[in-house]
Length: 205
Image (cartoon, rainbow, N blue to C red; front, side, top):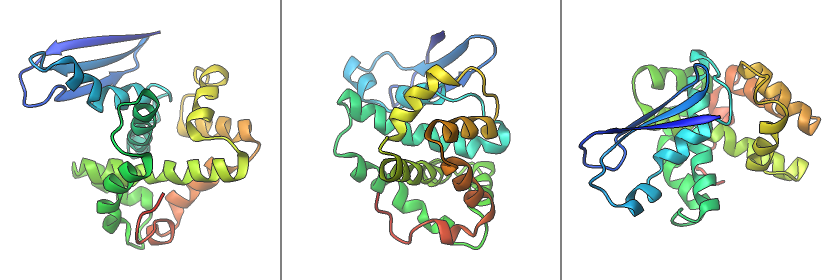
C-alpha cells in the first residue's frame, strides 16, 4: 500500500519539492504548482524519482547517498518504460553523470566522497555520482546474469521487499536471487577502494 499526498505551492516548476515517508503505510508527498498543465507533470522527473525510492526499504542515514543514487538511476529507467524520456538512456546518464566525475577522481573512497557531497548539500553531484553504482550493477547483471537491474528490482518486490530493513539485508537478498556476491562486492569497493579506481575518467554506460 502506498498513499500519495499533494500540497499547493506556487513555483517556477511543476513540482518544486517532494519527499517520501515510511512510518506505517508508505507515502509520497508532492508540493505542486497546479497552474502547470498535465503534460508538464507527466514529463517531470520528480514522481518517477520518488516512487523509485519506495522500491527499497529505508537504507539508513549513512546510506542516503546510495538511496538517492538508486532513485536517480531508476527514474530514467521508469521514464523510458513509460515513453516520456527524451533521448536514449545512455545519453541521459552521460549528461547527468559525466559533469560530476571530477569529484571522484580521488584516493578517498566513493562512499566518503558521496557522503561529504550530501553533507555539503551538493545534491546533483551526490545523487548522480552515486547513480554510477547502479550503472555498474546493471551492466554486470546484464553481462553476467542476463537480467537487468529493473527486472531484478521488480522480482525483489515480491520476495523480499517487506522483510529487509537495511542495506546489508537488501544486497544479501539481491545477491541470493542471482546466486552471486555482485552487490555486496560492489558496495565493498565503494566503501573501501579509492574512488579513482572505481570511476572512469570519461563516462560511458
